[in-house]
Image (tube, rainbow, N blue to C red):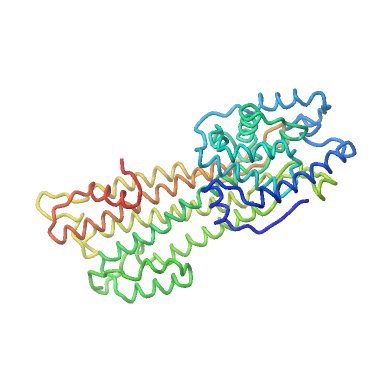
Length: 442
């Protein structure tokens, strides 16, 4: 039976990280698959042409095949679709993809056989599936069938799964590559947001900001994201406010945080939608009593949410750079370039390097999901979302934000030590901050 269920994303992430399958998949999902498959096989002859079950794929769906030709069809699909090249998804990311597929199967609608469902669960339990080589960027997300075919190839040839009628299309189709990859970034995103607030608290300690302003920020956080106001409980304000305005990169911190948290919330809501509804084509309905051709493999809402989050993170990285520039400006009450005077150039080059990094990422992440369009499969596949590539851009953007925050924290610490008259090497501070965050600075 087709299901729609509200999921808890933290629980899904825990399953992926701990590599454990929940009861929803192991027991409930298996029962759903078994009952639906039985009904489908009973009704298949009355359905007529069913995409990928008794027809070829893509714009060749007007060509039918019969049971004795199934082996040849499966071979042809893999020969024509397993054409991906590296870079490959990491073992961790493959885990998220496979979990996403099993979760989707458990919602019903795909028509997969117990042979393949059990084979995929067994490969998960043996941990062998995590080594599957699945290409990361060889798709524009209108089903992600090229990455999906690589998973099917692994199951068939490395795990010995017997693919029955309909299994091939059930495995390669759906939104699971896009959704699973997106789910895999939630931990990195949460870490970067914690680092953002922690770094802002450090930077506030070296500019002329009043306690009243910090109190307003905390009140704002109590409304926007109350669980994170703790970062500002013990902000050490070493400089008194002179009444001069701070740069907007500092004054606009509350507004930026709100924008970023709203974008994150939208991303989570889009993920919840993806993991709450079945995704397959063809999609079997009423417990296998009917079938419909549709496009549940498209997830434009997740692509749009990813795009908004990328923009919000761009804004955060830009603001971090501008805060660094302001801290190295005498208008902040600090020494120019944090120089101790004489021949000391201080941090004169730091803003320039970070500006270059920001501009590089702007070039790489400037493409948005609907800035261009075309069609494939003789016009049958004429809409896609670039979902997987957008998640890749999102991961790169998170990495840049973390790099910017690492540098910002180091600049704030450098300023403090120079003002105390200490001799300090900036690179050493960056490495020190990186080690504290579990990062490696090369």
